[in-house]
Structures are given as structure tokens and as C-alpha cells.
Figure (cartoon, rainbow, N blue to C red):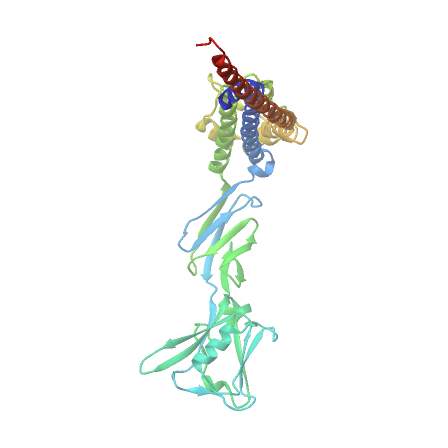
Length: 435
């Protein structure tokens, strides 16, 4: 009986299986649209890399002596050449105590204290309580572990025969972080014999870096100077007193070329994705054709400003196989000949290729746009199929129950008929003359 019911139910399930196959197709198409959306997003990002004039404000800076001075430039820099002298590096203020046995303790009287201050602000200080006697190691730990540490690190240098020194080092370079000490109770300057280790002759201003730019002397508390030449960072590596180091700020042609290569790569990646989807789940979908026509429509429409109006004029062209290629030498020549015109070709607010292509991709990707309308339609179809399959599952369960009941009743009837047949056979056999 169960075998017959199973065969009947297989026939009953054929419409349900067809719905499941259709749902698989829709879900595969939905996944394909996810791939298309990802490719379009990558394409849009690449367009944004060239879609504003700021994207072309790419500068490089070089130093004639990078062992003494390293330089970098950002988009706010200006073209120029400067003579820089690195007269002095900024340094961390260091102080060292006299030499003491490691068993020596300090203080022990009420009011005894060591006050360590960083900079000119008296509030930026730490007080080490020495009312109970402390060793140099104890003092080190009290300084380093204090939550209000003002920016100083204490260390111990162990010498010979159990002797040691306490070293205090400012965490930041420059005179603004110079260390000063004061004392309380019976503790005074002679207690520790602290001396500055920096070769500054008592003048903490010499903790600052000093450079000159085209003869103009400048001091800073750090060795990384970001506010001397607009858009240029000077990283001081070594002092070269009296020696001119030439730094040059120029356009970073190589970086722009890389961005243009990225522009072409993004176009080719999108085109490759479209081709792959057309051969797969979106074979008959008109969306892909709409996207291709949109791209080619812009690429074939010249800009109306600047020296250049077509991408081919700067070495960017569509090949016979439909891919975009970049002629590096032609692009470099165009950038060197008229950098601003190349920037306008891509980034003009109205007709720049990157601006228009980026806007087109944004239109496809926006809420209610081409991609979302397609995926919303597929989601709706999948939801409808799921509802229909659920309803059909419930109906099939009822059908199967009915079949089982009917066959069960048939089995009972057959058993009864078989019993009746056996009875009649035996009765007939008992009749006279039956043998």
C-alpha cells in the first residue's frame, strides 16, 4: 500500500517541484544581480577617485638628503623648491641622579617629598610622598604607576658593585616638555643630585628642533613639522648644521597615471561581469544591455571644455574586443603637456567623463533605481512562490492522508471479502455430493 501511495504522491508533487525549480531560478537571478551591484559599486568608487579636481591635487615631495630630511606632500601643497637646513633635532629631556647603593633609601620624615613637573604648568606635576623612606626603585615605581603621571618615565640604571642611578625622561620632545624638580621637607636638590644629561648647557630651548627654510630660522618641539610649508611634512632624521638640503614639491604624475589605470580596470571589470552574467543567469535580461548602452553613450560623447575632449587624446581607448586600454606614454605626455586639461577631461563638474560615469552608476544603484527595481521584483516573485508552495504542501498532506485512509479501508474490505470467500468455499465443500 505504501508503495502505491508514494507513487501517487510523486505524481501529485510534480506541480510543487516545478514551483521549487522556478524559485531556484529566481534566487540564482537575485544572486546574479548581487554580483552586478557589487561590480557597479566598484566602478562607482573608481569614478570617484577621478571625479573631482581634488583627485588631481596629488603632489610628491623629494629631498636631496633623505638620511637627514624626509618629506611628503598632500593635496594642499603648492609646487615649489626650497633650501632647508637641519641645524638641530628635537630631543627628550633627560635627568639622572647621582650614584647610590641599591640599599639606599630617601626620606622618612613627615613632609618629605619629590615633585616632578613637566613643562611650565605647575598643575602638570606629580608628587612622590617620601614621608616613609623609599629606595630609588620604589620612587621609580611610584612615578610610573601614578594615574596622574604628567608625561615622564622613570628607569633605573644598574652599575657596578650594587650601585644604581634614577633616570627621568620626558615622554615628549622639546622645551615644552622639559622636566623640573622641587622638593619638600628634608629633601632638597642635594638629596638626589639630579643633573640634566642633554648637552644643552642649562638652556632647555635647545631641546627644540631648529631648521631654516630659505634662510628663515624656525624652531619646533618635535622632529615632525607639518606647519612650516603648507601641505608638506618635514621629518627630521639627522642634524646637518650649515648644509642646504633641497626639497622639491611637484605633481605626482605616477599616482595620477595609476588612478587612470584604475579607471580603465574598473570599466573592464564591470564589462567582464556583464559578459559573464549574460552567459549565465541573466541571459535574456535587458538590464545588462541598458547598462552597456549607458556606458558607451557617455564614452562616445565628448567633453566641451579644456584642451582635450576625447579620452583617446590622452591615450585611453576602447579596443576591438571592447576592453579599455591605457597608453602609458601618451598619458604621461598629456599630463606633462597640460595637466589641468587632463583633470578637466575627467573631473569637470558638468562634462567630465568620471563625473558622468559616476553619476550614471549612482543612478543605477540608488534607492528605486534600475537594480533595486529588478531585485524587488524578484523578491516579490520568490515570496509568492514560497506562499504557493506552502499552500500546496498543506494540500498534498491532506491528499496523502486521504489516500492512506482509502487504501486502509480497501485493505480492510479485502480482508473481509477474503474471509467471506473462505467461509463460502468451506460451506460449499460440505454440501452432499460436493466431493
